[in-house]
Image 1: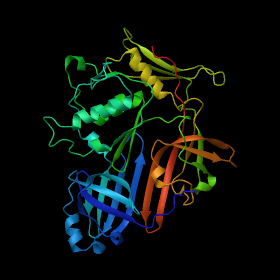
Image 2 (image 1 turned 180 degrees about the vertical axis):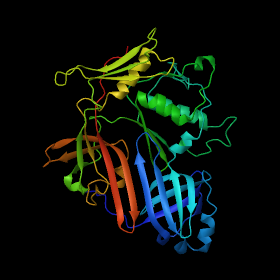
Image 3 (image 1 turned 120 degrees about the vertical axis):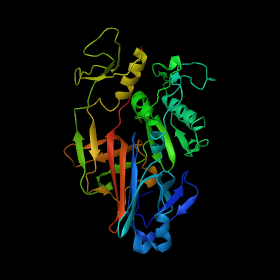
Image 4 (image 1 turned 180 degrees about the horizontal axis):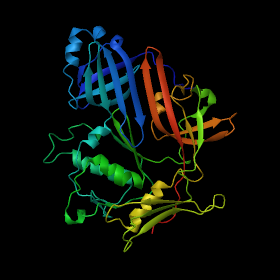
Length: 383
């Protein structure tokens, strides 16, 4: 059976932008600490610390020439590439050089949209056609990165060949108000993803250089692993929290000052067990139809009914080296089943992996994770 195991070594390579052409690689012995993360719907980060005395004069000279965004940091766990992204900051003191980086989603945060956002066409030959929200996200990224007036070169961050999609079964339509009048929404691509596409069901994360455009996992998806309490070294916390629970999710563009012409979308069903338990989401976005609001309600429903029971590995605890899961399987968003017997809130249920945090140094490797409940979407018809 596959196990997490314990890393024998970590290596770091500084690449030129694009992640293929090496610039410099500090000796393994000079790496005093490595920290990297994976997360869902956010930018993950990594930091390496290099001892100047062990790096050598030649390597030190190259470390002094690292440029944010011109160079990228790549981290290997033994021989496996586990993290990659552009350098953000380099800090040197008398004894060490610290390199901080963000994953490749950072390129989406630093690229402003220059395309129309009007995904209403039913013609599949039209690039801006109705389709899964993951396909719409990829199209927006591709149209912005393929070239154009403001591109230094086509696909300058080298991202387009590394997009992976896991499409939803429901088609979406999306229009930013004003695009019908040939107006461009001048915001970073990442803001479009966070503000408009994630509420409609998009999930994004990274694995190495791959940008994964996925969907919320459901109980129909296979589990990557089944963990027990023996899979964790140290304490765990089981949290049953009703603050985010809901049997009905309402989304409205109504304001307290003016309700004229406002609309709403709703997803869910009144529960005989909980009764009517509503959550209201207000949006100030303009030009949203009842269908748009329903999409947001549908995307916000999973994980609210039943009351979510989360499992967290607190600071100081970690996955055991014997945990039956590999680092390759620890992808933010995947399903992981957990059976925690012997606890007052004993549970055996499916979860989604929300965060991975890895630290390596003199004391070895610590791998911490956070898990959130899986919830199936309510499949009510759209308005």
